[in-house]
Image (tube, rainbow, N blue to C red; front, side, top):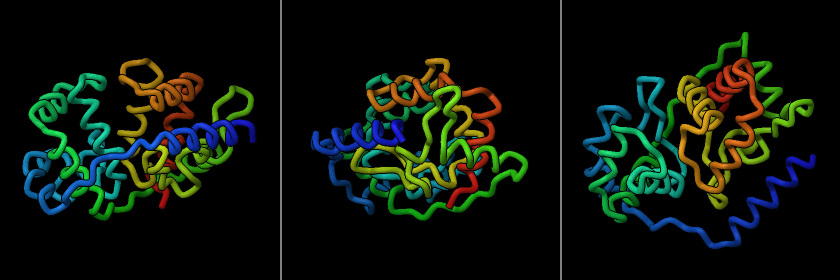
Length: 203
């Protein structure tokens, strides 16, 4: 309960700060997304599980990640190069396009999903891992006003890599990202794999 209240307080503070993304044009974003399709597919539902699904993700979150790649806060050779020439308008339009698309559902490995679901909903009190649903909501839709991304249906391989990158510090982090570093630092490999599978099947 304390973890949930802490997350709620942070989310409320972030919402009150008035952080808002530029309103993008989805139609313009569709035209600009041609170079994104090789990895993320035309509708944002990537086929390769190491590349994230963008379809249906909150526009503000997507725009923020493009800005992070452009500024160097997040580092990835491919994405850094892709984001470098983008203007603020380009990023807003691309985010609006992918946010408007429908995500294809995923399925979870039943051997891991039960443990992952328990961790997602209740955390691990013994090790201090917070419940994922406190920020990402019980159905995984996230909280766009607070900048917390949707995670439901996301590829397990990508979620697992992301959590491990947060844990190791390899992923550059904003203030909200630093919260994820704190959570992931307390997670075991088995917990990461389990929650990643649960998230992949969450709808």
